[in-house]
Length: 480
Ligand code: H79
Image 1 (cartoon, helix red, strand yellow):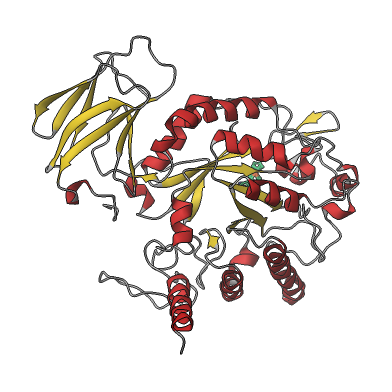
Image 2 (tube, rainbow, N blue to C red):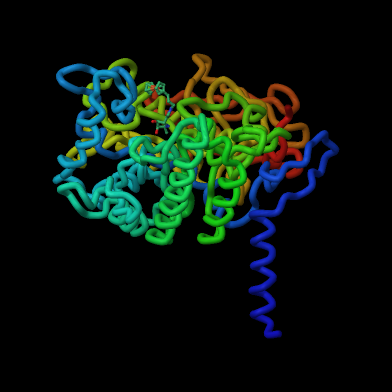
């Protein structure tokens, strides 16, 4: 056998086993045998997942026909999430299902959206190919309810994939299992007639997913939603097999924990408590507080700018997050080994609203100066302090303090692990700035720094240490 063939075979075998083979737990634990539980324990270690882990910041896009009513119908204000307006009692279903006949976003420019994401510092994007309403932003051949039948006519997903790919931003496709448009769709299966209908829906779902990966082979992963229906939860074997099929189509494909249930109906975490999928996908509009909350898993946090609006709502009520709040969420996510994904909901014409554009620019300006504390960085196992967050570069070991709350004393406390000594600190933005270390006890320091003019943005202090690499190592296992 030729050497290259052997290597190819070995690679194929190793890759396959990394992605699909259940491994025995290193610990003794009570567990039941599951056919459709987790197929791997612990993090994926391949380069695809390493890339994912190192993104830090992503962008979410929610776009569909719900952007046309924009949270209003017949002069009335819909208080729910704009993309859910079809489920509102004031919204005639028939009117909603005909909105696509008006979908003609004249201002849509995929390059403009991708430029903005790039300037913000996003390394990946998650795009709604189809939300719960079932309207497809790509010309699916399995339904007529698609962009092809709208006055706009052109493939939106195709344009976005091309634009984001061209700027080096990895594309992930959002796909809703819930589909209010498909005749075979059911949220629960009450009798044999339902079951029969649902089979057509399962085939349709499988066909659409295969179609998406065939049409957009540069897709890095799928972000599933609407998988909480009883009907879908009962499809453990089908969904497991479908996941395998999709993974076989795209090497390294990344799918989170929201895709499928195990045979006992457990979602995200199987009957044994092991996460199903490549990362925990339960952090929606909320974040872990401590590293223990993450159970040592990869995770992403998807976040809205207002309280709970994903699709375009023309009238944001309630608190709208500020740039500093969003930057803090981003840093906190990275500091706890996760990714932060910020949502954008363009309007019915294809414009990104001014509030979102302003915030993206504010984050981008901060990222421009400070991105090295985000990209490739993760959790540093040092005792957290009140001034902010530590991050550490996973490759180089370079350590950072991201300061959000400067104490009135100007003294920032740092406690190091037992064998680690803090030697030097400097400001990332201005290495010549006046800053000093005072050792107060062994492994406990004050960093004295008083900015001349108080900063209205979080700032970064770089730390240089000596001592044992072993006790300042990157977090491996949650202490739970
Ligand atoms: O796509 C976004 C949401 O539409 C979807 N997932 C994110 C990424 C989602 N979030 N929560 N849910 C779906 C569950 C639905 C919650 C609901 Fe409601 C409560 C639906 C009806 C009542 C929230 C409040 C939406 C409408 C009113």
